[in-house]
Length: 357
Image (cartoon, rainbow, N blue to C red; front, side, top):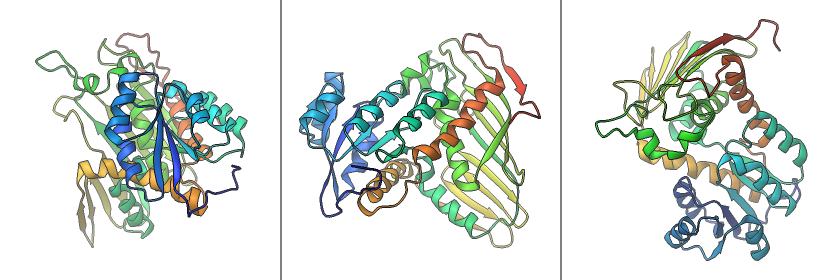
C-alpha cells in the first residue's frame, strides 16, 4: 500500500499488534471499540506476556517475532507497542512489507534516529505516531475553547506535572518504579518518557515553541536518568512564554498526578486542574471529566483517528513528520541542560546561546 492509498472502508481492517507489554492493556480495548478493525494477531518474544494478552482478548494469531507474524498473516496494518529501542527496526520491517503503521511514541531513541527513519521511509507507507495525550477529552475541549477565543490574547502559559512517585514509602518502595520498573534503566527518563506528552499537547494547543533554558535533576540512586525538569520556552512568532515544571519527587503531591495547566490571557484565565477545566473571567465556566475514563479515551481517540485516516483518507494529526517537532524540543532539553545520566545528584543548568538557531 502506498502513502496515497487508503484501505477500502467496506472491509474490516486486519491489525497485527507488535508487543504484549503493559501499554497494550489500553491499546486492545481501544481496538475493540473500532467497528471496522480487528486485532487478528499479536507478537512478543515473551511467551507468558504473549499468552496473557492473546487469551485475555481472544487473539488467534500468536507469534514470537514480527517477521513471522507478517509472513503468517494477511495484515492490513500494524500497531507497534514495543519499547522505544525497537521502534525504528519495527517500523522498517513493517515498511518493507508495505504496511501502514501506528507506532507508539517516540519514533526512535533520540531525534537523530527518528529523523533518519523518517528520511528513509519518505512517503512509502502511512505512518502515525501514537502520541495520545492530546486526545484526552479535556484537552480536546480546551482546544475548542481556545479556538473560540475565550482567553483573548494569550499572555503566558504554565504547566506543572508534580508527583511523589519517586519518594520511597514506609515499605521502601517507590510507586513510580513499582508501576514502571523499566524506569530504573532509562538514561533519558522524565522528559523523554513523560513530559514528551505534554510538549506534544502544548504544540497541539498553541503552535510551535522554541526551548531556551532547561534544568534537569535526579533525586535518587535507583534511577540513572532525570526525574525533575524545569523548561523555559517561547512561542514561535509572538514570543509568548511557556514554563514547564515536571518533578516526580515532590512531597505532598499524589503518586499519580493530573496535569496543572494555566493559560493567562487578556480576556480570561483557564486552569486545567487534573480533569477539571475552568475558565475565569466575565463568562466563567467549568467542566468536570472522569480521570480514568479520560485516560482510556486518549487511546480510543488516537486509534480511531488512525483507522479513520486509513479508511476515509486524510492526514494523521500526529504524523511522523509532525512528531519530529516534539522530539526536537525533547532533544533541546537534554542538550541545553547538559544533564549527564552518570552524575549522582548534581543538577545542571545551562541556557541556549542567543545566536543558537
